[in-house]
Image 1 (cartoon, rainbow, N blue to C red):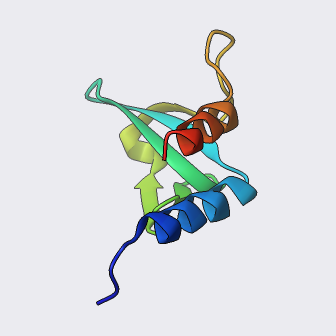
Image 2: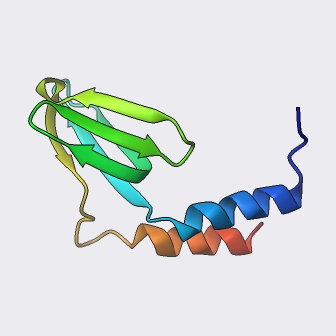
Image 3: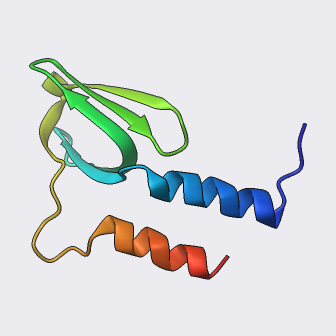
Length: 90
């Protein structure tokens, strides 16, 4: 197992920032609100698929969801700005 050094962590963060990062918000039918940070998002008539920043895939059946949003709301800051600000603290 490789040790996670500060340099390696910095490289991983830079790799994430070089890709398009999106925030997806899902409101489930039971009222639970869940947010995901994704590199890629695809959706169809039955399924919402996301590639999370961690590299994992997430499949959500849309019949279990009240609504979802892939566009930021007017009062939210751009997620890429927040990600770049966190890099300076590393």
